[in-house]
Image 1 (cartoon, rainbow, N blue to C red):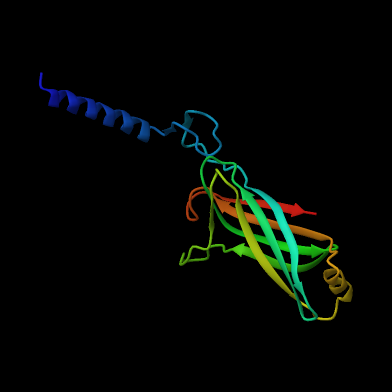
Image 2 (cartoon, helix red, strand yellow):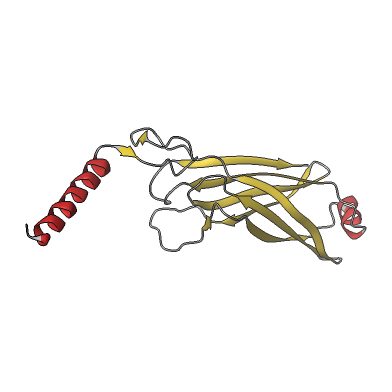
Length: 180
């Protein structure tokens, strides 16, 4: 028998098998949470929430006009697939008084023109940094004394918005966090 016919038959059989698996609605590996080996693809894919930690907060500079504060978050992805982190919004409190609102990244609005988002891989954490400038209005001298003496009681409350596969497909996930 001709070897070309045998090779052609094997290739055709492989294409048919791959086609059946691909179009049958089953996925071989659950690439989100590492659960089942074979799972129906109609089941909604639930991404595990991103793990957000306050890595660092410090006062970089204080003078009579303004104070500069740096905040760093460590974002870890527990999923087996990368996650797109669109934005992290947060409020900074000193002694339970909100002194600043800030965000890292952007939420997409209408047409997608830029890509100001972060791809969080599953094999290593990502550090997100933000610098906040607070102007001294003279209305809160006790806050300014606390900043000058570098003895603030920080609290951060925030939310992170992410998608599993792309910012235009899939369900948007929201994580809330709070650090004392």
